[in-house]
Length: 401
Image (tube, rainbow, N blue to C red):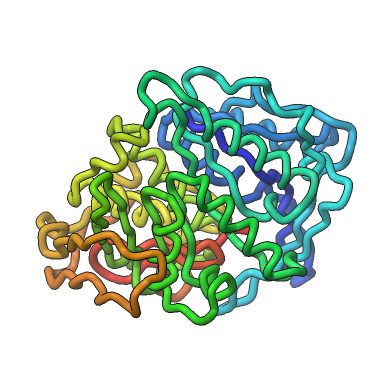
């Protein structure tokens, strides 16, 4: 089972009515919340850990979780109001947000709200996003992941669950860059998987190229570090027990883009769901992933993000919809990943990018997604507003706040 913890809020999305009046439509959201929905729609066991308001917005959040097979047994209810995020969408631009989180139920998650132990079937804990920039929830989640990451058993490697971190940075919420960076690197060191967008890397390490930043991150401790690269797809580095690092990249998928809300969340959720479905959700299994397995996991995640971008709002696909999005056979072989020795603590200057596949465009089979009426764009998943890439064309992905 996967446990998702972090913010769950209401996105107030500005829209125009049929009479051209501007109104705000309340929609359930929050990056870890959307990721939990994405996992649930793929029929993978998942539950949410958090603190929800007892107001009517809190009821909306709970109802959507249950409707998508996400457990709520680790959710505490509170009298404080629900967090709100006002969202402005403009054609050709990333979504703009204004957050109202002070004193809200979600952001007031305290140490006392944490369960003394997680369910024994917990195999992965997902955390990150704006919850890690607000107190007391940031310190509470940090305590949880450090506690769970320190668990031991007869099998020292698999005594603890996989910890998967997505910072999903909203820079306007961070007032002290250096202070945040120190905590970010502490969370990275504790993580098993780090999924970071190229736009996040620009904020974190402005002097480094994305691959250099990814090398820096993998040297801090994670076994798997992934960077989503907008129109250039996604790149992953996998650190093995012998110190070698396997480098795998995937290109993107092109679908009509409606908006990019929730694309990075769908990518992260689909990646974790793939690992769970394939029996690879453990620390020992992760370090032994074959190159083909890692490629296929990234491809599956890119498909999910591309499909989300073809829809309005954070509406992740089902397993059947992802499987119906066909790509040419042999693509993985054409884009054979490269294996490199472990990078030193200080990353070398930009490594060569993985060879791009040259096979033809996918066959006419169309994915089971809503037809968009807007112009086709190509953006791959990044947290902020970038879609996932897989094989053929370039994808678009929704960015979620």
